[in-house]
Image 1 (cartoon, rainbow, N blue to C red):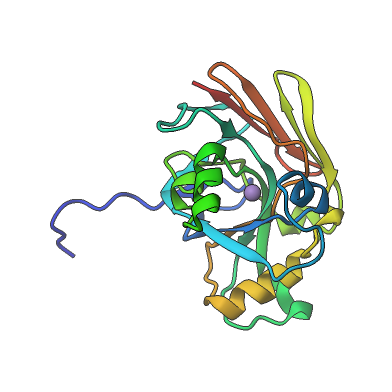
Image 2 (image 1 turned 180 degrees about the horizontal axis):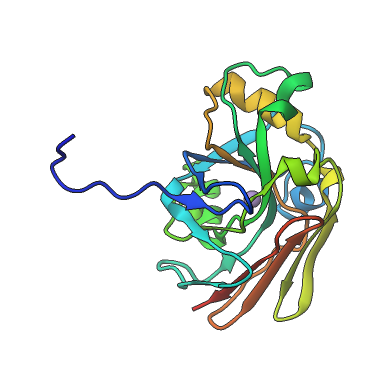
Length: 231
Ligand code: MN
């Protein structure tokens, strides 16, 4: 196929002994831990899940051998990392039933939903979309994927974020308001999920700003950790 210009290569994440994982789309769920919903001024009660997206090109890949550097983005004075368990989809489908949803998962990773919090607050105040607060360049640092073969189904486990060695966020992925099979079911009712899609599953309480030079360490029990320096 001849194109008007050479297309960019597919965005990939490494996946341990498996071949590289081609990323298709990135979906994220908002306010999925009650303590974080409260700190953001929301309702800890279970509301219908709120989804948003980032472009696949927002991925900043990372593996333990080469920690990533994220350039401090433009247009913000309040950049926040949100540590999240990331689900990588192996199979696609619409209306995926909850009791089958785990069979569609390729594996898991640790991600950062980087957020221009000041732009998000302004968008919320005006009832505008969050795209420029959430979907900017390098806004999705992500670890290597650990295939489900190694981890089994992840339903609980420690999730933590440190900045310059100090714990900022600490929780358990078992405390998600919407559990992973419910997220896959609800999201696949809205869009046809596809192999290669990533789902960022929300963040626990303790979000706050980072500045140039900060070292962010993000972990979920049993997965390859993620280290990002703000450059
Ligand atoms: Mn988030």
